[in-house]
Image 1 (tube, rainbow, N blue to C red):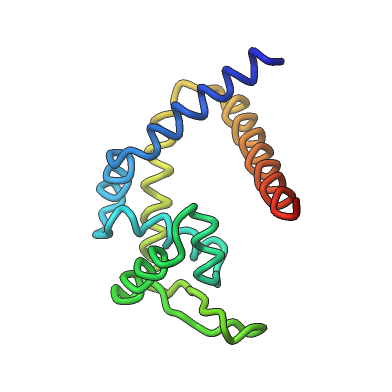
Image 2: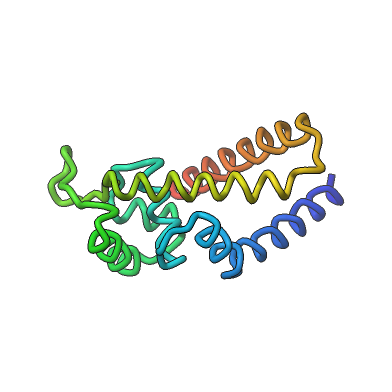
Length: 153
């Protein structure tokens, strides 16, 4: 299994490298026909998918610094894409919440992402795409659990 782990690691490094380049984000934004700083849309999408989210939790999900995310949420708020609210259980926590305008934008981004992925996977068997999605979800869930368990060590 050592060889397979090395191959998986290399594939993940290559994929992460591609996804961290500015071109895929710029292409997604162009296809979606939206006007948004590419550094902001991953935050917007996470707030839409998992919100309301505290700024600290959002920073952790994105692998970014709290102060950076707070500034970026302020930009999204200024654009009318999110609002902030006080957490119902802990008034010290400010949560980001998607607005209707933000939801319209994430819907456009979803449509663009679907077009791009459909193009990338056009030559794949549907069964392979289904299996890839299942396995990546499993890997992401297990990685999340690993990180959560390592916090208590």
